[in-house]
Image (cartoon, rainbow, N blue to C red; front, top):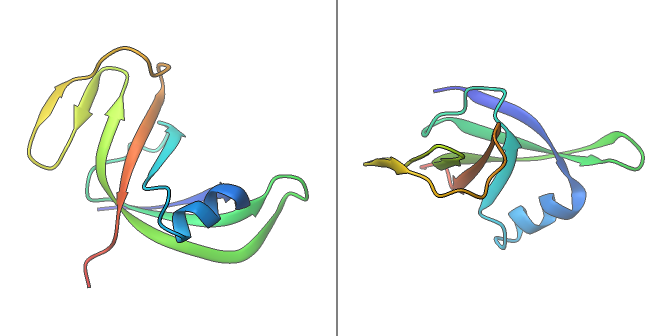
Length: 95
């Protein structure tokens, strides 16, 4: 299990914190795996500054252009996602 520290634009960060956004779309450049932790760090792209706020989420599902990876199964993904990108399903860390 790895922890990935990534920028998260303020508008999306708030939606994750408030529970409206339970996924994240990323370039797949970090070998994301189900069970890894995504540390989303609030970032303002207009000022190029971090706010200092962050949240940690568990990667529970990975959808990429060729394969879907869940905790119990894998299957061929339909077309529609640009090659090299992934959609990460985000859950809460166990207590």
